[in-house]
Length: 52
Image (cartoon, rainbow, N blue to C red; front, side, top):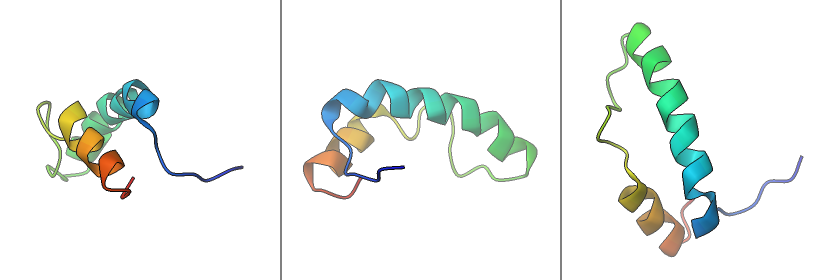
């Protein structure tokens, strides 16, 4: 396994993961994420500042 910083091209894959995880989070009572957050712009900003 290789761990690396994300790049802009990763955003579609990240968003797919988010879509898959939100229902599981909600089922567990965790409502931190919703259909509108986090969004691609949030991840793009995190990538730009080197935090993802």
